[in-house]
Image (cartoon, rainbow, N blue to C red):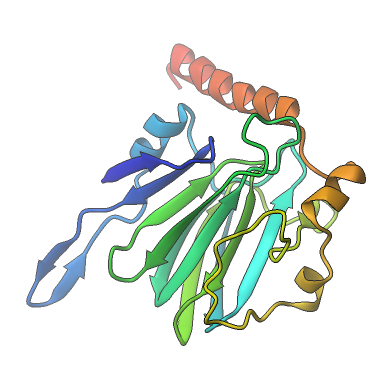
Length: 209
């Protein structure tokens, strides 16, 4: 599996090796050991989500309070989406930086984003199915959203698609509004949380568990 860190620190893409024969194709779309090597801590999966979207459906930008936030490992099982990760951690050296990765059923690439990062995707095909593994279950009290069409974010959505948003996503604040309201994750709080994940893994290794 090929691993590449994105422009947003704390996010990676994972491209699996595909084995083809007359029957079809086989691949490993998630490898815990490979992910742990990149993160320096394991991903403990507490929820798995699956969405089915029509062409133009735009979901996000979503994030959760840290700690514990909600890290995600995102994979497109059918069709194609443009997956976007945004650094919304207040005080981050790369605050406002984003990166986009095409996830589809051809390259079968996946994206991991750490807790505290913003996430959104746009369906590029008539139907796009997306599965994602989550480090925490959904909590409506701790879950937040930002406008995916915020000009300040300048996310690279295709210009030939009219985005279809939920009422909740359409009413989401801009990045500046959320920052002014104190709704964004703190970069320092995220860094401390990442350290606890890495140190917890070190303790587990040291105890032989």
